Amino acid sequence: MKKYFLGSILMLSIMPAFANSQFETYTIIYGGGVDDLGLGLKDQQGKEYHAYCSQQCGDWFDFDQDSLGEKLKNQYKGRQAVVDLSYEINAGRIVGPGDEDELYFIKSIKLIDSNQRKPWLNFFDLKQN
Image (cartoon, rainbow, N blue to C red):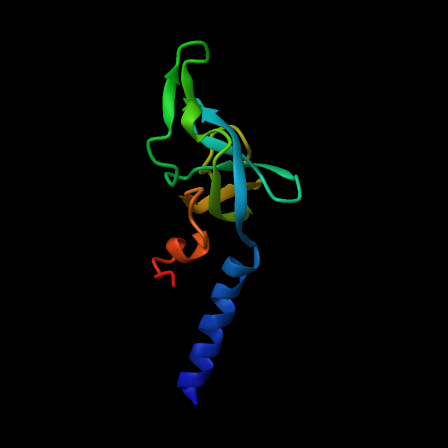
């Protein structure tokens, strides 16, 4: 009985992590930053999001002399990506917003090859038929 009770508590404790996650296909529209890198993402309904990379974006940025920060390389603008996007409390991760502010964070991101038939299968490393 204890095993089932502890298992139930464990499941309830991790449910909020899944509840605020938005796993979808987005178009990358901009990106960059000075202290913290982020991307502008547009979903298939046209809604735009600014999400912080949290070290998930890879080597997608170049130094920008004008802003003394980094900007998204042109080859990534307009690309589609499968993104696990989460809306979370900042908790000191991003410089500028308060610790209690809620922000979008990229939990994982995978660029979609335009020739790919089923991009979500590649995200999970599954084989296509």
